[in-house]
Length: 322
Length: 131
Image (cartoon, rainbow over all chains, first blue to last red; front, top):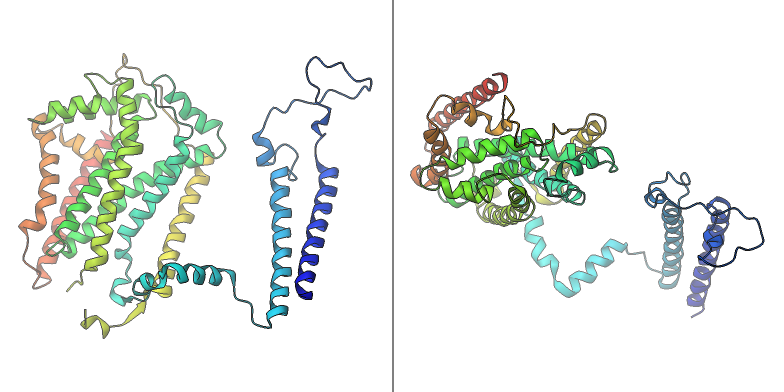
């Protein structure tokens, strides 16, 4: 039991030390404390302390431009990490001292804890230990995987853009300008979204050509090919719907012409035309419709089709060329 | 498959996963570089949309440009129907071409067919871009 008390004591001492050092650094580096803030209507105190400056930029505390590097956020991260490292060291030393056995790494503890309960290794073992033949380790077999990787990039950057984008004709253009000029790293994220979209189409086409040339679409892999073509159509639909969203001249007129061409298909054209434009003209309804398709409907359909596509590849394996 | 056990192979984990992680890391670095370029040269937006003002040259994105260029030479109905029919044909292709490859000859035929198709599409795209 003695060692348990010693562990607790060490832990307490380290926590107190960290708290004291954090308080000292805070006292020296923090901006003027807000304790001088006075409620309205309360009479001014006699001291002639200056009026506290109104904090105009909340975000600056986070990004570090307010009080240089020692913002509260960074301070928390630094001292938190240092404290966690120290606590971990204390706990690990005490454990080894107590049990007289080698330290079991934390990831291993977590996995064995989960494995005891859910037998995950039974599921993962056949997947992870599956041999990959050398003929599959060629560059042209990674085109489909790269398409999926770029899809993930599109998802991540698309979500970031959706935080700032406003799908109305009055505000769409201005919100794009806001993303480009005001939002931190906004232009970088939009650039990635733009080029990764182009890259995704190139990769999807390259993947399809590879499958076609090698004849990997032949039985028993027909449905995989069908789902792949659906995914390519979906990718192009992503491009078409996303193109209208900036609501600039190029976008507006390209969509005008594009929906007109869709409208000239016999039999289903008129229906497609009305469905795409949500009426006879391109209005705010068209914009919200394209936005909804772009950020909700298409991603969901694509994810579902992708899942089927991957499961079929998993089940049937890659076709071995002659 | 029993015959696969005899050929040279590596375990999926960790060997093959490491290779895939390296590829993903490489593309990820490329993506970050593109983002850094975007900080200095943003994608940008054109003039705001104006339904009253039709611009002289309307061009779609490059992946629709070849179809758009095609529309200049063939009737509009045909040009709009052709891609739909083409996609449907591509989709049902595995049900039409069912015979397994006996020789590499069929693969070569598909390769040259794809090459010609890609060259035609690229040519139409470049033509549409410069015109």
